[in-house]
Length: 53
Image 1 (cartoon, one colour):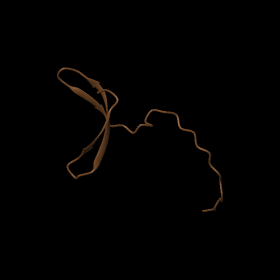
Image 2 (cartoon, one colour):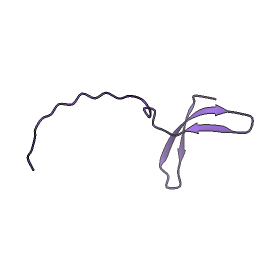
Image 3 (cartoon, rainbow, N blue to C red):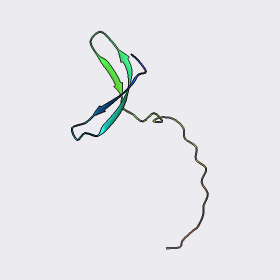
Image 4 (cartoon, rainbow, N blue to C red):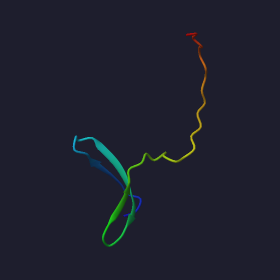
């Protein structure tokens, strides 16, 4: 079903998380990108120290 998330394993046993994006009579399309891929991210950074080279 579109939107469901699955955990797959590669040949080394590492987990790959995917989301189903489309289903037809003959195929299933999955997206393995990180959920934040393509989104704007905003960070707040505090500069603590500057060290000269």
